[in-house]
Length: 397
Image 1 (cartoon, rainbow, N blue to C red):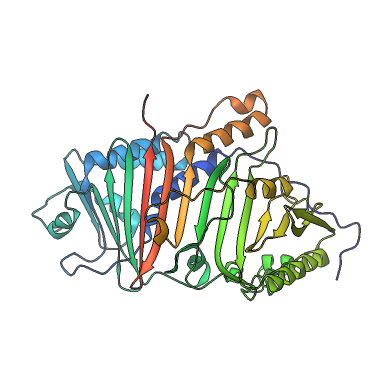
Image 2 (cartoon, rainbow, N blue to C red):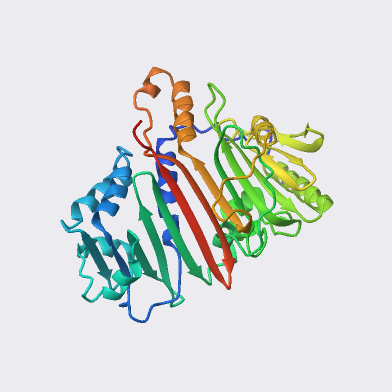
């Protein structure tokens, strides 16, 4: 049942500076690998374990402390203060909880109870192991030098279904990219093990489900197949939001178009919005130009030969489908079933552009990030997800 004409769409939400989101994104880039799982080493004690070289961990924490006035910086400062004054450190939390590791930091004893873990560290700098509900153990290894932080993750029997399964790569290699790399801040490209069941992101009968009918045929995976790809681009001058786009590969183009058009009809039955025809580069689609629920949010889609490409607005689609499109520089190259690239310098540029839209007060505290770029890739083999992450650090000229 449609709402009466006097039912107003909520006014645009007042935009905020991207500082908190950028800092959180940087934190996730460093910490996302910590949810991994690998086979348990019988010689290791039960619970959460961490060993490493104190100077290496302190160096990483110093990077995080440069994210001034953020919770992440404060947590890094507290952890740095808890580090022992020794060449090596170790920590063991029988509870298995990551937060309990900080409370048990002590000088490392390679011949002590965690000797087997120290031996597994070898010539690396950091080794973190976390138990999981399935009885396995997470393992994250790191090497740290003045220019790079390199992380290696192994995760046997990683989830392939549900919301987390959508974010994790499967065992089939990625195809070519669809979204342009021009002015691209962030790029994600994943071929999930169980396909594109987007309904996993929306619980049945939830508020989002009721408002937007997100469990429609399109989002239930009936029309979609293959990989998803997302990109965030620099904002246009004097604009309050970055440009962003999402590409969803389909198996049958006709089914995908019917699915998204049905989705648009369902939105129109809930909100007083109007569909407008739209096309870009010969690819047909549509826009909802008066869906004013977020800053500059006027979503548009086009159906290319391979995918539905959905933009925050028409400008986002134009950026996403512009030339050139270069392959992402990910470790493991063609073998990867998932990749991520985050350009921290462009994050800074985006922050400056958004700040300039706020006037002189917005430019007072420019965002400072201690890294240049993050590049990651992952794939599954023998039921094990393996990921490699390289973070290029910002160095003094």
